[in-house]
Length: 147
Image (tube, rainbow, N blue to C red; front, side, top):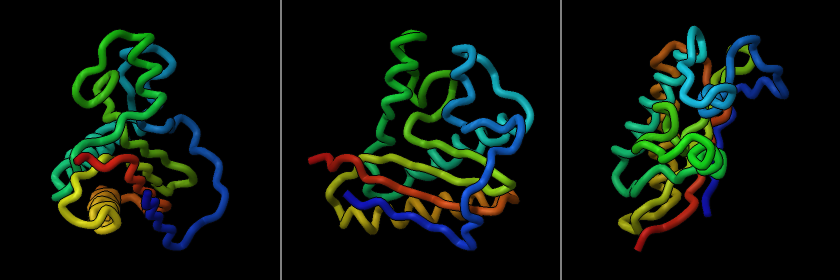
């Protein structure tokens, strides 16, 4: 399955900014907790990336992660976009001022999966840049093809 990555001006290994968690991990401390400050900004951006991803022709759905399944088991049924309002299948993080993304999708075979993944990556990159952030790695993985 394709895994398309983009590393413009890759800053190399980076340390996490203090107080800024991976968006999909923001609720791990206390199930159902509401992120604040810089983390809330990443959650809003993750939701926008999820919506943009689902709007790409050929994307069937965001592919749930193992972490999302484990949280669902510990907190009850998942809602449509993930536990605690976080989109499952989209992970954003900010390290040293650079926002990185990991997006896992399932696609319909209406066009090549690598084209779909590239469109997702392009839209995510545009959203991150449009929100005023420097973009690091944007990885899109096509984890399944719906028939």
